[in-house]
Length: 140
Image 1 (cartoon, one colour):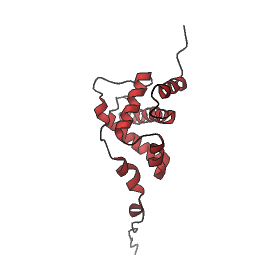
Image 2 (image 1 turned 90 degrees about the vertical axis):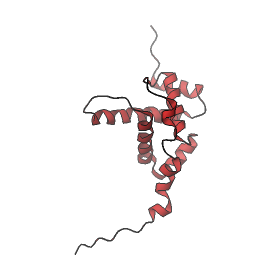
Image 3 (image 1 turned 30 degrees about the vertical axis):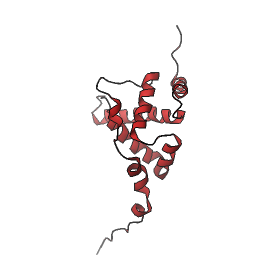
Image 4 (image 1 turned 180 degrees about the vertical axis):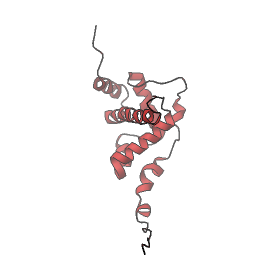
């Protein structure tokens, strides 16, 4: 009986079969699904539940901001990701490769226009947002 391919081998295969995105993008999505799933399971008191496309997009937004901060938009651009539909394309390629699974309610449209990348990854770090005056707190 042949050994099952490792996650690394499956990621390599996915990136070869779907070269529109680099391997790092597929690896990020796999890692994000695991982390978001763990968080959701914890919130459900240990009961695992399926993650919707919208929840996955929102979770990835948070992870990208946490991990890359103001560089998140540049990282996404380097990965050829410009809208949430790209997240869906990555997920479906990973499903095709066997790294992720779907449920019967899942659809590619779940990833359509979940949020605007400019609003999520550029606007929070714009000078106008950062240079707001700090509130004055009177301690006396």
